[in-house]
Length: 336
Image (cartoon, rainbow, N blue to C red; front, top):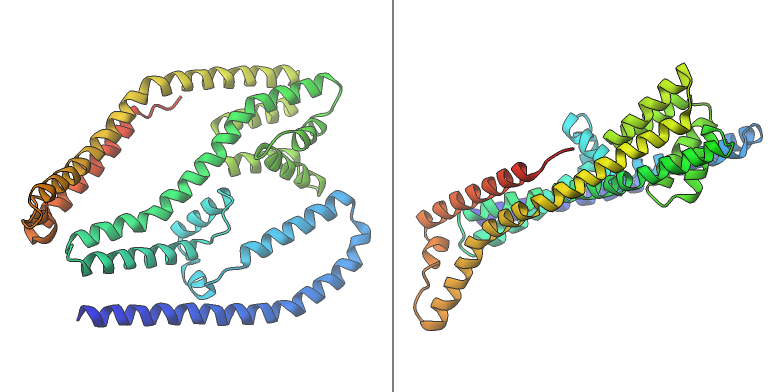
């Protein structure tokens, strides 16, 4: 019965992949006529656009075309109405990943299914379900890691960027020219995000709306503080250079406190990691020592792996170990 399930799953997966490739070919053939018509229309309207507007339009069109391309159009259409998957798609875009949510979910399902089949084939029983669940969550955790790493670099560069803008304002630049200077001279991701703001403003988006779009994309508390201060200053007036310097000093102070808290909580994080890995390391060590002392006899760990009662106990222990690890990480994670 299990063999029939494996064969059926394999056939369904191959059918979906082949159907996806066929639809990609159809979409590519249909897009040729669209590209020709767009080029004709672009030739008629390009003369009325400035250089900034033309560059922004081309970049947005290429980015939209990239967002539309997917290797699994059918699965994408089936899952596009789900709110959770739309948030996952947005997280993938924020992490600058070329993957779509449908592709990530399909890949996670295939990976977990392979791990489940292999684990069940080697006699792990109920542990195969645990291993498959962990493998299903790996791609999601990787996306969150990429997104957090990208915007952590943004937060690290924000204070220096505000000081650069304040110096530019004191030198006689306007606020828009200061942002353009940041987009030219700052490293990514700061240059990418501020460059997008400049391009939005150059095609007619109000600067307050462009800044609010930047804050929505990044989701940084420090950036929200800067955007709020700039919007209020543009409405009521005041020295913008002094405001940016004050915000930069506040951000630097918060970063200093964060570094101190990170030093103080490092011991707790390492303790949580060691406590989570210690039972696994002890089990491997006991298995190696028992096999080294009596190669022909079963080790003390084998009943946990190949007996149904031992597998249930091991699955419960692994689940409680994971819950305990996340509780420790939650305790030592202090937001400033």
